[in-house]
Amino acid sequence: MNLVDYENDDGMKVWLSESEVGQLLDEFEDTEKRIAVGLAVRCGLRSDEVVRVAPDRVADTDAGQMLRVWKSAKTNHYRETPIPPTLATTIRTVGDVRDAPADDPVVGVSTRTLRRWMERATEDLLDATDEPGWEFVGFHDLRRTWATSLRSADVDAMVVCDWGGWDDLDTFLDHYRGTHSPEAQRREREKVSWL
Image (cartoon, rainbow, N blue to C red; front, top):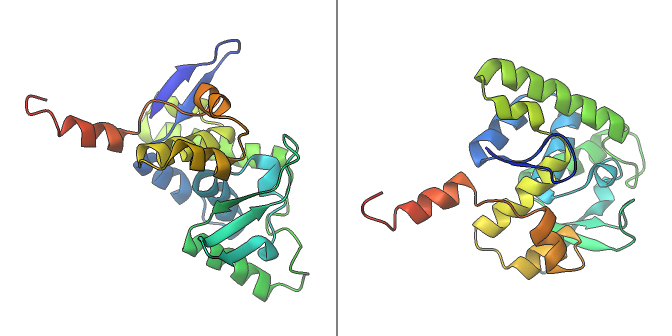
């Protein structure tokens, strides 16, 4: 877990490692909660975007399965971002089994409820792991983790900006890109024989 103080606020920005992402996802047994957290940490969605995702937003494109994000409270721009196959299947399955229109959101809660789900999960993880960083993890840190994970995997920064809906590279670099993931740091350390 990487943590950095906010410049003008209390608390910290947090970037989770892949194993910590797994721990967090394992905290949610309920399908709706797993979808919500998955959309943030695997697709980079903001909380207001998560609560508007519907089965008809999953699209098969020439670039692979993508999630169509029409607009958010923060921006007024359309974008498409990759969605993992298992998450896409889960969303489509939820759409198939319920009696609702295809454009009806699959996560039927408020953004405040998303934050409460995260608070409960991170409190449980703090108790279970004794990792003090869990105290600082918020829902938006999942988007931050997603962006940095992509860059650590050498995804082109401009593609990350496109998928994440950032208008310019400076915004991404200033607010979302963190130190490299533990996996990327380990990969780089292996290049040095004396480490």
